[in-house]
Length: 220
Ligand SMILES: C[S@@+](CC[C@H](N)C(=O)[O-])C[C@H]1O[C@@H](n2cnc3c(N)ncnc32)[C@H](O)[C@@H]1O
Image (tube, rainbow, N blue to C red; front, side):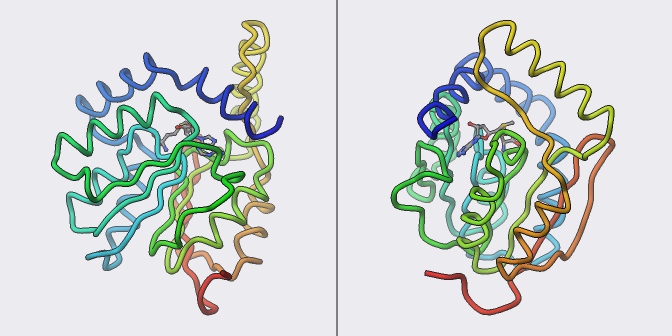
C-alpha cells in the first residue's frame, strides 16, 4: 500500500464518527490505558518546556495532557483529517492553539519531516503501518531525548483478534489493516538508531516501551 492509499484507508477507519466517539470516551474516562502508561513513564522525567512530536496522535490526548503539566509545545502528525479536526478543536478550547501544530499526512512519507523534538510518541500507531522499519527509523531520528511507543504483544490471542478484525475489514471492503509486528524487530530498529530502552510496561494486549537517546544528537 502506498502512502496515499494508507492515508485514505486510515481516514476511512478513523473518520468523524470514530473521532467524536473517542472524544466522548476521553471526556468520560480520561486517557486510554496505553496513553496512561506512556504519561506515567514520561512524567517520571523532567519535561518542563519540552517539545513533543506526537505521531499518529489521534484526538491529541498526549499533547493535551502534557501541555496541561508544563511542556512547551506539541507537533501532531496524523493521517486522519477527522482526528486532526477534533484535536485542533481541543487545543483551541483550552487556549493552546498557538502551542499546537497539526500536520496531516503519513509521517513515514512526509516530504519534509517535522523538526526534531525532545519527546516523540507513537501510541498505538506502529500496528497501523505495514512498514514499521521506515516509520520507526524516522521517528527515532526525530527525538532529541525520549521516545515512547505502544504496540500489540505478539501473542496468539492478540493475533487472533487482529486477524478477525482484518477479516471483517476485508469483508466490508475497508482497506485498512492492523499488524502485529515482531517486538524484537521493533527494538532492533530503535536500538540501531542510538536509542536504548529505559522502561517496559503493558497489559494483556499492549506493550509500552520508553527509550532514550544515548549516543549524541539525531542525524540531520
Ligand atoms: C489507533 S489510533 C491511535 C490514536 C492515539 N495515538 C491514541 O492512542 O488514542 C492510530 C492513529 O495513528 C494514525 N496513523 C496511522 N498511521 C499513520 C502514519 N503513517 N502517519 C501518521 N498517522 C498515522 C491514525 O490516523 C490514527 O489517528
